[in-house]
Length: 162
Image (cartoon, rainbow, N blue to C red; front, side, top):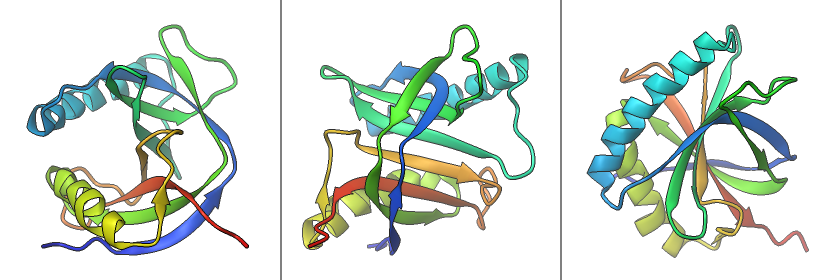
């Protein structure tokens, strides 16, 4: 079993994202295909709206429940004005448990499975699922399907600071 390592806990202040979302299926393998396709469309929408980033760019992917279904949201830090067809997503301030996924995006489902099925049940951390399930943070260290690629997976947690 691959055991993802927690690189750190991190407090993040509230921030806003601008992006697109879609309803996920109940099949993990189908969602992997849908998400890859969705990223291509999202990146095209960024370019079409002159929101393409350069330098120290950041993109996010959120998995959340809207009460009835699971949704996947791709976003960037919110620009001054929300372009037509984009939606805003507010990420509340929280403490996060940050994992690092290294390697191809094809392996991220296994990393997520290891986190939720093995790491969390055996840790002292309590996942705060009322905010959202988790988000993936992509930056200049991400290189599509490259062995040295890095994606951070951030789970909101309750952190007892007493």
